[in-house]
Amino acid sequence: MSSLAGIHPVREAIRAGRPLDRVLIAKGAASARIQELIDLCRERNIPVRFEPREHLDRAAGGANHQGVVGLGAATQYVSLEQTASSKGLHVVLDGVEDPHNLGAIVRTAHAAGAGAVVIPERRAAGLTEVVERTAAGALAYLPVVRVVNINRALEELKETGYWIYGLDERGEHEYDKVEYTSPTAIVLGAEGHGLHERVAKNCDFLVRIPMSGAVASLNVSVAAGIVLFDWKRRSSST
Image (cartoon, rainbow, N blue to C red; front, side):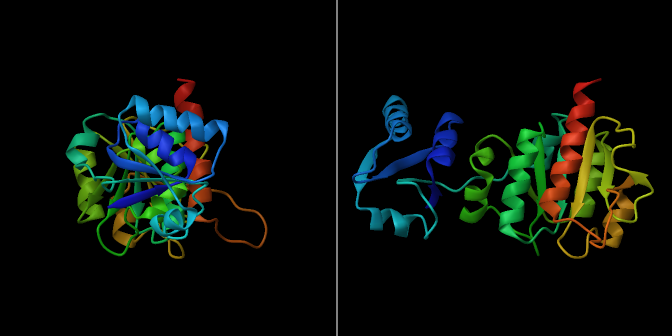
């Protein structure tokens, strides 16, 4: 059984219709936000249990739960065939291993209006409880696709009509000057080494974020925020 820690992630999961077996509330925890959550649980027929805080500490795996933990089935992956048919923006991650980075990218991708996030099965973070917490409720709304091979996934997206844009320091185009063609997939590389060579070759365009100063690269979740919100800004203006 998977756990969701914190008022906001639990509330968003319930609003999105994610099945929860029960919600634990720490005894003595009282606030307007917690009362709103209790009312929402009753409205959706989700059992609420008031338990000692140490029980919630264990259920949340030591995470900061704010007196609220939701228990239920883990978030399910969906197929690329399902998401590609929507023609929405796909954010493809080439081996992002840090679960905090994955959670932050999921949260950012949802806020930017993406249709799906695509991750590989091996040598990459999956949908762990750390990712759930860091995504702060976004996983309740944004589908995540897990594939055996990223290169094959890119080929499938191309077959569906997608144009593939890879973020890489070798890119010929600056991220805010390239013209995006819809439907669009944006590929982000792993921490440390960026896009794998074959993945880079599978992209229709390579784009880069121009850098100043001595630091040569950005954290992948920060880079994702820059590029995805630039895509959102320009998509909204067309």
